[in-house]
Length: 342
Image (cartoon, rainbow, N blue to C red):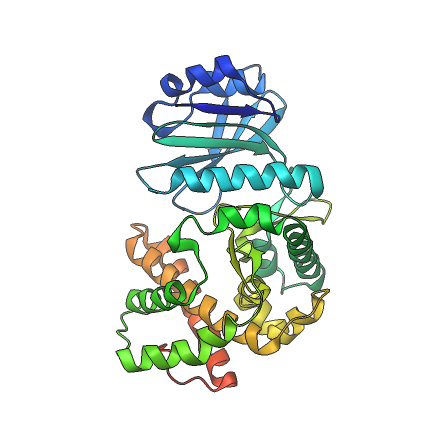
């Protein structure tokens, strides 16, 4: 069955065409033109880093949008993640306009789905690029933290509604079992097998205390790549497919461990920008977990990248996250996290 949405309204005839027009796992130009009322040729360009879902900018005449395609071949949970993101974007448009791109259209089929969102504009750049290229200025970081706080306020108001979408995929959860498994997987990706006794000790000292806080609906991927700084300086959040439950320090910690942010402002400096209560010990534990995750993920991407230059950049980023993890572990007295010294 193919479903469709377009500016918040069903589009039956277009939906009926969806299966035929989404050949090869990608929406055709004809389907996009029909959904968007676009005139002229559709021009596409890739956006962002390689992920399990393809993201493109599409242009038709003077207008541009962002197209995100979900495919079963790269994500067996594609339908759940599509529905999460579609629901969040729809709710944000009504309750917190400007915090995220406006949703224009979407179609879900048997093996693929896609969303079309407003382009955030000429001159927009990821927070990662902004922070990495200009000495980590405080203003865009402060606006990103404010955007994250606005997200947490939005999800607090709709907690029960959104919580139903948070637990459908085990891989995205922030429970003890999943966090412990992700920790071991990240270590394996950098060539470390943590003994069972040390793994249990780490979970008891880091994961269990972190999860004592009341759960919130998290973005759950609040890294600097998922904050977009518009040309006017305002900041938007993107990529809501992995929302999950957990303490807010997981979201804030993921932003705070960006090497440029951590090196200049530290965990405490980032926490000071957040307009609400932050548990510094929970933030450190969350930052340590996310830094190890990032190190492992980037190391894996570096090994798989066929381009030596690109692989080298990924490897250097992995090493920087390893340095962050080592420093946090030393500061909080955790000697069994498994990260080897550089």
